[in-house]
Image (cartoon, rainbow, N blue to C red; front, side):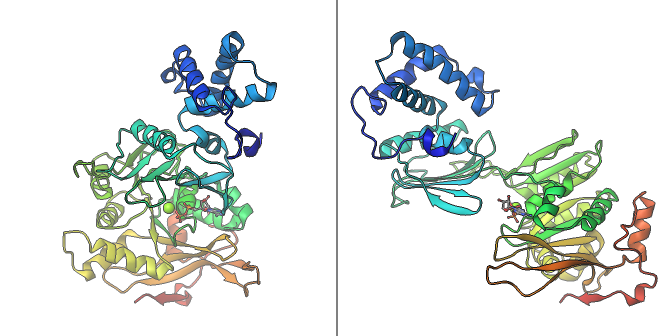
Length: 447
Ligand SMILES: Nc1ncnc2c1ncn2[C@@H]1O[C@H](COP(=O)(O)OP(=O)(O)O)[C@@H](O)[C@H]1O
Ligand SMILES: [Mg+2]
């Protein structure tokens, strides 16, 4: 069913006794909730919950409802069920899998993002009060409060969506609500289909992950770091103990032995904050085989690097940077934000021994996300960073539509990498092969 047939246009008349009558909707919502226990339905999916509520409400209306046209009856059922489910007119938007973001800028102004494009919907809340009620329902479900003394809330719904609320007087448009849908997980096969990488790269990355190379995924905002990290995590063999640490849980690992940790912001009194850093440190005491850090942004980088170089091989993380060199320098800067005051040279040592490979992603102007490089960190000890390219995207000039044509280039792997793969029972993918004489490796320095 299309979105527009599910919801009503803002100018539909709210005739008294008709399906648009707010009082009628409220009355039947109350009657419905008398007959059904919403808490009992919490294990059901949204569409199952909706079906169940629609059926029960249908019975109630047949028994004691007003006389309505078939269309009016359908409309009333929709309205009441939307209200009962808790998010009112937002409910069908949350059900629509093609929507990635819902933006409510006050009661009359609702936008969604669908396949990367933002559109305004012909929808509105009946009043600012109704919008506030919806917002209160959302934040109270996660034990948070929003009011004048606490006018900004950042939370996550039990179903995974990120929610941000900011209300007047801080927001001048009225209450503003932003809901970001749980990102969809893509498989490596789907990423090949998008042109993000090719099958030879998937073979290489699979071998590296299974052979427990420490991998950093680097890229700008929205370049697909979390998506690739999630897909790579799927290659970790079943049976290994994995601990994931994230600011806002996005990873969707399928293995059975996974412990997911999520940081917590301070509460209203400014207490109870648990940082990524606390969680990374705690994860080390949990005897993990691998640690996955959603994104390093601060001092936790040092803890993560220490973990990577002391027995937690095969760990994965993402960092925000625009090239492989940048990623290494950024890790160094972030690690220096730890209160331990480790000298810069010593941090280089730490990174040289912790990081094996950087996978760099880019987002092209046409919206395509692409693997730009697989970079091997070839330096040791306190040496300046030296990078050898294992694979890269050779870009041709961009078209006027922002499309970037080109092809992936695969370089022979250094002997040491091939040996490590063989030792782990992995193959060197044919498209790569092995370098016979490493002195001819194309390496560059990062400074
Ligand atoms: N390879 C890809 N091709 C197309 N879309 C992608 C790809 N990777 C991610 N996306 C989409 O781009 C958006 C941002 O992805 P995400 O992985 O969260 O990026 P980042 O972690 O770098 O900020 C999401 O909507 C996601 O579905
Ligand atoms: Mg991310």
